Length: 317
Image (cartoon, rainbow, N blue to C red; front, side, top):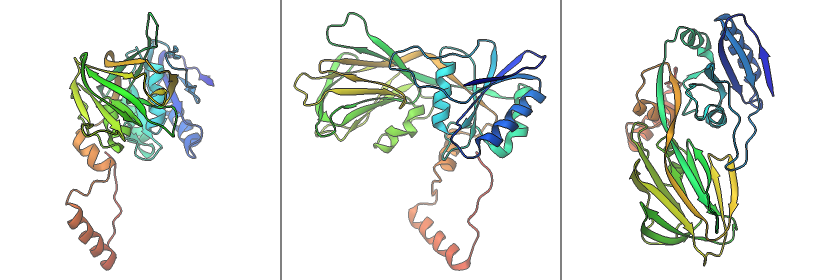
């Protein structure tokens, strides 16, 4: 649903929110009030419907200056569909758990909106992956994209999917597995990381492939440069068909013989940044990394429990 609130000035902003989050209503009201007070014409989008795989996504007006997203990383992925193929930046307000892509917390709203009004922010461009799906006998592919990751998995949970993996049209391996994840640097801290893949810094132009429970001796995460491509084919002898999903949103079933090609997209997603906090610090803060090492961390925790020390932290990255 899209709601409008008009102002005389023509600077335009869109607020995207997750209505199921407990505090979203209060934060939305504050965000809209502050944006309007700063001279913006504000529209609210409270439900971004998931399109089908390779189907066109809704887009915001080209004259929109910024999209303010209230929610977690999932809400930001929904908002990314609205700005795909545009140059409109996204500013994330974390109302979720980790909020890795978000820039600030809700209590910082006043300062953040003022800086947006003053154009006092930088742009962090993020790589996007492009995927072409060639169904058996098809003359043209089905095309889609992902900011985080593209997963190709088995459709039958009781069986394996047999895949051939090629890099730049050279076969690297083939194996039975639960599936594979192809992620961008942005997605390397998400599903791919949970599946054992490495973290890739956002300024590295690369794609990585992470096998899921592969039945093979050589089935490790593989990183390629942005000029290269991954091709996964569902082999005819596979005991299961496949299932593809982009960013956990746009998905469809794939029969045996389907070829899936993933490469760097020419498009970029633009994130608005208000601080110069380096990516390394974001990792430490968002993942709550025990930088002193697990043994020392354990002793520190024991000391705090013994002495009654305060372990609460203030501030965000």
